[in-house]
Image (tube, rainbow, N blue to C red):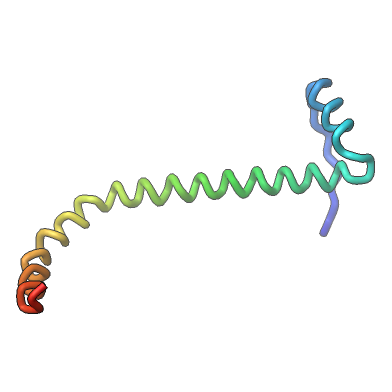
Length: 82
């Protein structure tokens, strides 16, 4: 894995708490893990929203298919005696 050094600005309080909680030598790895988890949550949330929007866009199509095939489904159920 290629490592790249970057500089970001953090609040003094956040940095102090982080440095108190995470041992030297583990900080870069911890930040990498936290960023990966955050990026994964963001990706999942985008995917979730896309799925919701897709379902909403297809709702009319699903209802039309249900209307077209519901009578056949009821006929099958009657024939099976259910």
